[in-house]
Length: 328
Image (cartoon, one colour):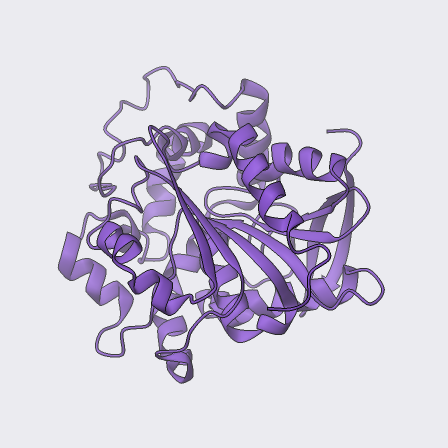
């Protein structure tokens, strides 16, 4: 990864660490949980070799980005994170480059949907992965809905109490926590019962998914060892506040050209109602410029790392058609 340049950019009151490679139209890569800019290592090199400028930040609360008050989850709403991203685009985009391409996954996908909803003037086209658009339900807060659907052991519900899951993560150890998430391939909701976690003994050997090397895991672990998990977990803890603040966008559409990609083993694709939403036409109604939906067979949540060659080609082919076209 020695050719990739790293720099710090002051944006929206924080110091954002950014990895960058290539020259040409900018692609902003937005990572999820428990990830970092590093999750895009395969895409960064490939797209840079194809004439794009890949820009991949660590989001607030993650990795080498500093300045966000991790002891205050209210500073991690989608409005805060989109504020970071808009400021980053304005700080690093090329001369005259008012719009950029965006690629995102997991929590990054949620932020990308929000970015396109709040500031479509900043996005030329979007490749979003794993998490489909979720229209705001004005009748119930998201955490309340998830607790009612899945109970208190559901992982997002478990994440709500500040310090509780961090204490369990400390017992399990950073590498075991990371591989617990990275190894998850069940087409079903993730539950983390108290004291049981991923169901393996703290003394059991750590197994790696086929797509993750020991060096990759060591990089992730080194950063989460330094920062802890609280900043990352604050995204889940701010879900209800984001819901409260985004009432003005109830029933609003995402009007950015979009390709959506998901694995058929992904827990998000197999969550209650997701398949029906994606395949029934309601997804297309909420995202009217949704041009393509790709469902990868036998692929789980971390699809861009599990199948980088396929994902790289999907991104390249989709964005290429917008290089010399007029605005839709």
